[in-house]
Length: 405
Image (cartoon, rainbow, N blue to C red):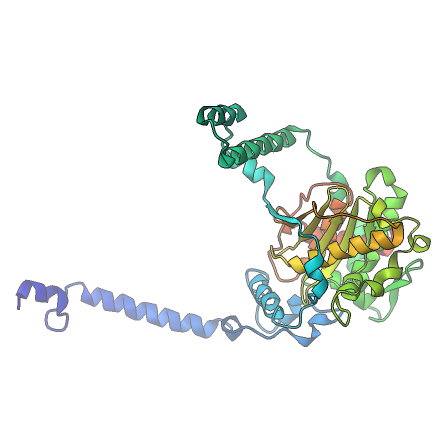
């Protein structure tokens, strides 16, 4: 055997001079690793089951982690696991045989227009026309590039427009507002004490229910539905500052999607009579539909003005079944209420991914409400995770005085 090779490969016979240092470092690393494993709570090494109380009015991620410590990601990783695991449970929507007869929209994914505009290198559209003429043939790829370039120019034109005024969405709370909000969320008093009664909808919110607006709380039906009522009233009060919208409550989609055979128009047929609404859905610009996906709030929009069906998920997910259900619903609704045949074969399904995303495991309901708040006024979704604490306090203030700003 070559002795030179032995120096490198037969460590037992001829140890390398650096072996002692290597083994000391390995020993130190093993000791530190053992200490870290003992120090980190065991909850980080296995997926805790979805807690039974998650569906209650007062579930709070902060309380759930009180036995250990709140993860640095605000429970986002665990929450994503719960959402994924909940997809194995019975689906909220059930496919029906009638789906086969449903007009298929053109599916496209909407990208971040600002980011795309900044990163794109825009070539003059004339370049593609010249190339087509020289080639002497109809090249679809060049045609697609020309269309894409035109879109990029349109995006740049949008960016050059005057910046929209979003100050109405970020009005600071006064010291008096802060005190009232704090007393409502943390003050003493019976949890069953009714703090607010919205007479026209007969929705009442108790101290226990409104405490879902504390940090880490999961929003409940009562708070969401009352806030949607306030948005309706704001539109009626300020029609020039709002789009013509309809806001379904959190129970609508459950009724529509969870009949004996899945889709069930009859169960929601009477929800939208002219006598109840004073208008027909065909007259609206946008129709907002909250969707509860087991442990997660999402939003669907029937955009009548743009002829699109949109899906907003603050975790970046998608459920095409929801849009299929709503496509079928709006066709039947228009036929029933307006006696018109509605052709949606040219409509598009938009899985929106320019929407702000949550960075923790408890703000999905708040994100959904702010999507509705901003979009019902035709505003861009110019907010993020850093605004959620303020939005929770602002929502408490608006609910207590029964008026959305």
